[in-house]
Image (cartoon, rainbow, N blue to C red):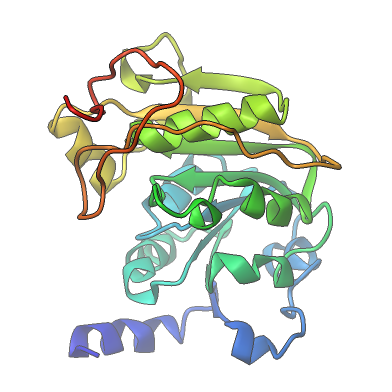
Length: 262
């Protein structure tokens, strides 16, 4: 591990608003703040909002500044990246921000039933070949539902045509109530304070001419969770491994995607 990463970890170890616990630390038990975040940490009764896969924490901090009457918790496994947002929150004196370093798979050990009001998924890896690793898949929704309030909101913001299409189809298949669904957010009529927040990578994709997609829907419990029976074109940009698949259903050609043989 590089000296810079070690320095960041050492600094965050002294941050009162940063917590670290993986499965081996918990040893099958729940995190000490589970069910007590408002009471023992934030010391208020304000709604709790999670940013899952928060990366550098830019969105967590940005939302906390915009909405001082809500509490925000950024969660990611990459502690060195999280250092930026954690330090920004400290320097800005934000009392409604916390960060947790852990895997999303372990998240139910950190939050109790009905403890969380909203979940943000900001530019997650589309995981085009592995549905069970997609943070917007039904596998993860079943985890989120264990601690989210009834009709709690899920927000997805992504540059990925694949992930936006997949998630939209999954939401329809499970009959969740859609609040907002825009496939070109900054050229839409949707107006909201959140549009003022742009992460480093979001600005990068916009500069490359990619459209930003935004989906907001209510997460409700289901006896049966349905994965959409559909194959979608892979994105033709980003990291290695984004390729092309056959399409079972016909979609109109999208500027951010390509089809087999095109």
